Amino acid sequence: MEFEVQENQANNSIQGVINLQPQVNQVQAQQQEIPIKQTDLQVSSTLEESVAVTLLRDLRQIGVKLRCVLVPTMSTNNARELRNWDLWGPLVFCLMLALTLSMSGNNDDGPGIFATIFVLIWVGSFVVTLNAQLLGGKVSFFQSVCVLGYCVFPINLGALFTLFFSFFYLKMLLVIGCFMWSTYSAVGFLKLLIPEQKRILALYPVILFYLFLSWFALIV
Amino acid sequence: MNSKNEGIEMKPIIGQDRQEISQYDITKAAHPGICFFHIFFKFCAFFSYLFLGLIISSTLFQYILIMIFHAFDFYTVKNITGKFLVGLRWYSDFTPKGDEVWRFECFDKCKRSKIDSSVFWTFQFGASCAWAFFVFTNVLSFEFVDIIFAGIGASLSWINLWGFYKCSKDQQRKMKGVQSYLTKKGLQMAVQS
Image (cartoon, rainbow over all chains, first blue to last red; front, side, top):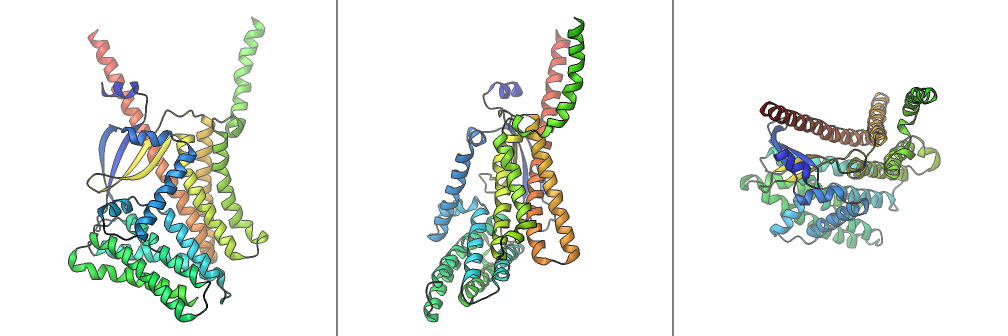
């Protein structure tokens, strides 16, 4: 009778769920299969939407997450928004930062800097996330990479503004301000997910990561 | 009657040839525009990887364009093309407890044709193999920067391929499950009646 009911309804989609639990000691994720259940109305509606609606929805989610990062209140609402990870925001900010730094005046190795920053951001996020996971943090891999990527945005702003100023100490102040902003946002989200004793051990690489990026933004 | 019979006999033979030739005929597909974009971004990515150095002299903009095309291709295939051409979708979701769960969905409502799905699978698989080949040749010739861009292209293509393969495997399994359930019910009813 269950299958008959499914066929009679207007929406014919069938869904199976595979559960991936992020356990640190396992090389491959554990897979458990839950028997077939019907999709709920909200999910089925996203399957029928047009291209434009999909694009707008994704862009709006990027905007919401960006606001959560830029105004780092420690509310649970923010935390829930940031858990719906997506990697498009980090990609855009990474490209913007790499482009800004490689186009600034006093260097002639633009492409090299672009590749360096690009690899630095992604490999750095990967390593910092791995570190947090190995220290026993209950943080999902992609969520953490997403948050670290979004928190690069203040450094992005700093790099853009330093293009317009040439007075070194002003640039330094600006970059330090952006660094502290980035670090505060990232730490605010990540420290909720890491056990108390190992918090400093897990957050120190995050601080180092943003310090290195800010220093890059200042020097280049 | 004779001419009709001949007509009927001849038609299947001609139809077969036409079917094989026009399997990739996009104008007859159910979603020609989407098929075009599916191929277009892949083509742009390959073109910019291989030939953009001849057109734009600034390597910086070459890199940026390649990355943009990789990103567009991945987004298009995952969110748009897969949904319309083969009716499959995969994404990550969160249980109320906060655990992350990967969902693989199949969707039958959309009007699709065989041409759609053959275009989708051929080009996705072909592009993935081509990027893997480029990664291999770059590793052998130690061109590190090219490894990065070919590697990104290869990993994004293979991730999409893996996701949709899992969707279609799930779909086939569910169809078999539905079929076996229905045949069991049918047999039961036949036995009872």
